[in-house]
Image: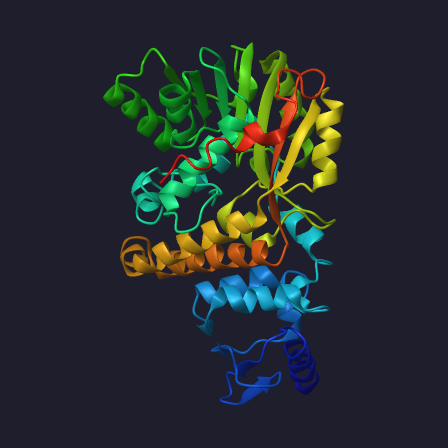
Length: 401
């Protein structure tokens, strides 16, 4: 037991690149690093290093959810510190593979639908508490200083539709349409016939009602259907934002093949999603178990390989890592304002879990542990139908005041 304590003490001493104070279950306090402590960790329960071995993020997340571990200070800063620190046990992925194999399952249509339900059908009311009024749950685009979160989400939609060089009268498919921000903007502002597909009952009901309320039945369409089952193809443009992270490693090739199949010759697609700019596990046990079951984050090399294999050609690739960091920081601030309300409705472990999740994700983007990238691709020779320079991609950036 003494050896276990020594090993745990050694691991914690090398876990962060900022000064951290740790209070142990026996009342003893240790300070690691030089200078005034920037965060304090309190261990309310006896831990051993073996508890942390293999899947530290899962063990620590569950400990935080159950209040066996408490953090005083900025959680994002603490986790970012661990990601920056070389040889931190928190970033050791040696045990991730076996752990996630136990947790992960296949991606049949039934399993995929269940995965989507578990996250997106928590309830529209839950997401309304901390998202902005556009109900957009993906990376915003901060094209100007002093933008509100809602303005930045609208700017993201403009950025995507501008990148597609979309022309009035064209047909757009949005794979994984969320609460419809993209398809409504496409119809109302860009003159497109817009179709969205989702597997979330809550999102489908929300978008269907909004279509009726706005009288857009002839211009906007939404279907509760797996993207693999869509019968109608022949689209001029395809958008897909925050979707490929859900299809699973084994289905990424099929996903891009479906994008190819649904496009007209020389049609264009803008694929936006979370991606790694390094080689790694692609899955975190905590995220897999509690937040996004069935999720997988592919790296850039995987994405490009699938794009080429599907017969698509790349027009542009843009990393938006800092934009997602800022988006998550806004969400975290919004969430903390309604934390007590969420805890009262959903229980304290759930409320703590989401607080940890949002701040941990912000830390991941801050340190480059993960990225988000937009891939602009064409079904045909790259650049076909596009202007010769990239200036057209930014035409909507200064529309918002």
